[in-house]
Image (cartoon, rainbow, N blue to C red; front, side, top):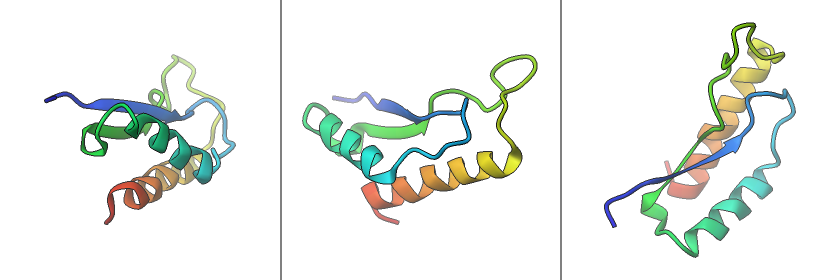
Amino acid sequence: MGKTVVLGLISTKTPELEPRDQLLRRFDEAARYVPLENLALSPQCGFGSVLQGNVIGWDDQRRKVELLVDTARRVWGS
């Protein structure tokens, strides 16, 4: 295939964390169409994607990135 499909499953607009089970289900769904080694996980966009920035604090941003890393480890192993 030679291509990577990036799943932007983590919102940078709100401080609420996405449920990890929901993220893993989305990977299972995508893996039906694209091999797991051709999938990637990322936030939907940057945390400061507008001039004024988003209403999401540093601690919430850190928790989002930790969720992303933890989910990636569960999907692909450490």
